[in-house]
Image 1: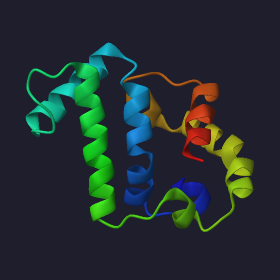
Image 2 (image 1 turned 90 degrees about the vertical axis):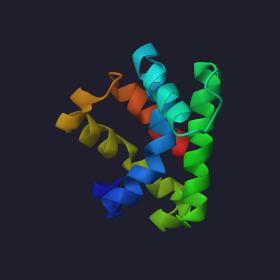
Image 3 (image 1 turned 180 degrees about the vertical axis):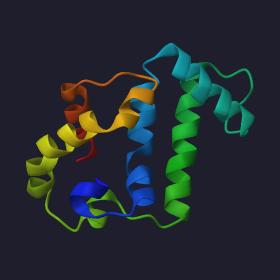
Length: 121
């Protein structure tokens, strides 16, 4: 997002964070870590199952974004939906070329990255 739309890195991360958490939680090891984080932060009861804990984590992140008055993706981009859609192939290629993708808990294919970006719309 930042490279295509000149958004500050932290804002781009914040806009993507909950989408990426949902995606990565598809891997049991990552799901356990997200659940442990939610419980450690007191976002859910210690006995909550992983799905409930992850949902609580996502909800708290969304609340924090609201409290910080972060803009929605549409407002942050200041561009129409069609312009975002047109740039998805370039964003997919940039993500695949980014060395940090190798450290993500869940491998992501070009198709999965495209789907994640389309979800943001």
